[in-house]
Length: 231
Image (cartoon, rainbow, N blue to C red):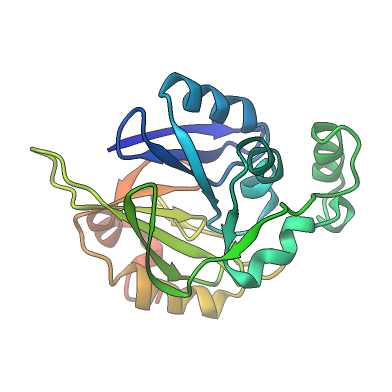
């Protein structure tokens, strides 16, 4: 398995490129601000062929470069239907003047995002194959209405991990995603944590939208937001 990642843009959003091996097809996950050049570099260095862009949710720091990359590689973008409107969000609706100005500067003066020509709906739950890899999806709202946990199997010798979960901004090492942003709902987030996050096995590695990697076992034991008194 080949998983390349880097923190993109001023908000340091983790972008991932996933393939079975060098020279194979690949999937791009959460290409945020200033992500295009680094994704292209990884694709060229590893001789990869992108087949899809998968978005864990629609916040601008996770989707900013999706139009550029889908146009460049001629591939569809996949997102939960509830977050699809964010793909054409006007920057003045972000509610933060500094972020609005930053987005306009990075986009060359545009007033908002442009939805890709080919946008497809992620399943609410279930599996689908991309790039020869079986992806499992779990609709996990709370941070946004359309947040999705993206899971793939993982098997490497001498590594006590059997799957990888790209958690977006649902779960971080030692924390969880905010629910005070537009579209967030704290009660819904608590249900997601109880029913979907804690249902994952301890052997699942977590690659989140910001910060370092962790495991479900570690978070179950140490993350204050996953303790019974918080849920």
